[in-house]
Image 1 (cartoon, one colour):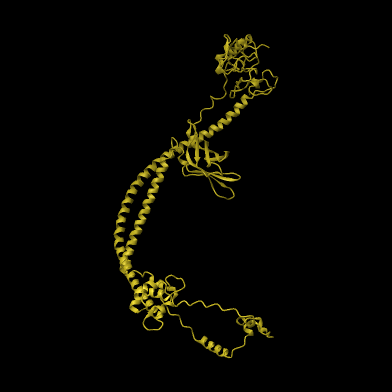
Image 2: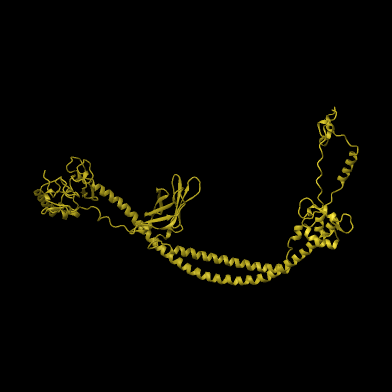
Length: 551
C-alpha cells in the first residue's frame, strides 16, 4: 500500500499515477455531462480551506511553523509536526484532527484518534478507510432530515417574522397614539390645574365666614360652660362648708377640718391641728367669705364624707371564754351568721313585713326622672340656622375642590404612566412593546411561574402558599451582536443565607408568546426560556446551504 500525499477524502489511498488517471476520469465524465462537480484531490483529512498548504511539488511546512519536511512524509503514519498537521489523515498524532467532507451534509472535524478505530464517525465513512469496518454513507439522509428540520424552523421563523412586522406596525401606531394622548392629557392637566386653583379660592372664601361663625358659636358655648362650672363649683363649695361646719356656728374650725384626713398636707396619717390651721390660711376658724379663698386649694382633695379611723383590733378571747358546754342541738354545726334559713326561728313580725311587701308590689312603679348627664352638658349644641347655612356652603365648596383635585391627580397619573411606557426600551423597532403590561404563566408539577416581561418574575406553590419574587425587570443582557436576545431580572426575594434571587430570560423565535421552561442552574439564579415572534429574523434560503459538494 502506498501513502501518496494526494489521498482522496472519499476513496481509499492510491498512488500519484492513479490520481492522475482518476482526475482524467472526472474530467471525462464532466464533459459527458454525467456529473456536475469535480472533486479536488488533496491529502486525506485536509479541508478544502487548507488545500493551498499541501502542495505536492514542494516541501511541507508545519502549520504552526515548527518545522519543514519532505512532502512524501505527509500522512506517512508518523508524527513529524508538533501540531500534528502533517498527519491529517492518520491517527499518528494525538493532537491531530481529521476533516470529514460529508458531502450532502455538514462537514466537520473529529480527533485523529478516532481514525480507523472501527467506529463510523463521519457520515461519509471516510474516517474508516482502512479498519475493515462496514460503514454506510448516511450523509444524504442526514442532510435530507436536517433540511426538513431547518425548513420547519424556517417556516416558523418566516411566520414569526411576519407576525413581528405586524407587531412593529401596531407598536409604532400605538406609540404615536400614546404620544398624542400625552399631549392631550397635558392640555387637560393645565385646564384642571386652573379649575383647581379657582375652586381653591372659592373654598377659602366660603371657609372664612364659616370659621368666624363656628368660632362665635364655640366661644358662646365655652362661656356658657364656664358659668355652669362656676355655679357647680359654688354649689359644691357651699355644701362643703355646711358639712365641715359640724356645730353649725357659721364657722369652719381647724378641729372640724381634722376629721377630713384626706386634706392632710403631708399625707402621713397624722392630721394635726397646726396642719389644719395651715390649710385654713393660718387661722383657727374661717367664715363663708374666707372659705372661698381656701376652697380652690382643697376642692381636689376634699371628700364629702370624712374618713373614719380604722377600728382597733379586738383581743382574741381566752380559752375559758370560748369553752362552752356541748349542746345537743344541730345548730352548733353552723356559726350564727351562717345558719340556714330552715333552721332559724321565725320572727313573729315577719308576717307583717311580708304583707307590707305585697301591698308595695301592687303600687305601679314610677318612671325615674330624666336627668341631664354631665356629658350632655359638655356636648357642643347644634349650630343655629345661620351658622349651619355657612357650614353647608363651605362644605359644598370643599367637596367640589376635592373632586377637582382627584381628577387632576388621575390625569397626572395617566401622563406619568404613558411617559414611563414610552421611555422603555422596546427594541430597535418597538417590536417588544406588545409585551408591556402582559403576564405569562408556566405551571409545573410543583410551582406556577409567572413572567411579566417589563415588571417582574415570580414563583408560587401550585397547591397554596405565598408568592416569591424571582427578580424585578432590570435590563436587556444579550450579547453585543444581539442584546435583545436576553433579559435580566434582579433584586428578588433573598434566599436563606444566600443572595437575592435573580432570573435570566432567554428569548427565542416562535409563532406564539409562551414561557417554555424554567430551571435553576445555580442556587437562587433562575433561567427561563421564552418564545416570541419579536425576535424572529427573516430566514435565508436553504438551497445554498445544502446539497453541496466540495470542489
